[in-house]
Image 1 (tube, rainbow, N blue to C red):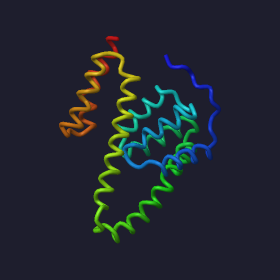
Image 2 (tube, one colour):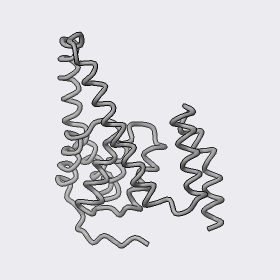
Image 3 (cartoon, rainbow, N blue to C red):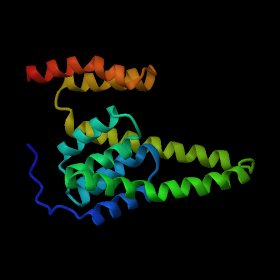
Length: 182
């Protein structure tokens, strides 16, 4: 059983600032690792269990996982106003940056080395996402059947290229049966 976190409810400004900071430091798949670090590890606003539940919801909800997770955290901590604060914080700087960088990229896309730099950024995001998945698995997979469900799901989506939602719907009864047996 996880210990209860005894932190004060963050202000809307604090939520917006934390998610603005995350939005400035991370982009794409690695964002959930930054969110975990800030809201679970550093600020202790959520427990590991709450975060894992939010991650699961953010992955099956349409849209970007990091944005969905920001809305989940904001809603959990401060309701609808918290969701808006976290969402605004998360998106403000990246939207401006994407617009500026998109305009700049059209001017430099043929410069040697730009393609390699973009590939390196993609590899870094993949590495952060994999590290976050391994850490969360280590803390939350408690038995061999649970590990097999996770591995099967990851293989079906990551290696087999199957769509995530149908795979999750197929694995849901198996997971529920295993949880019920425990």
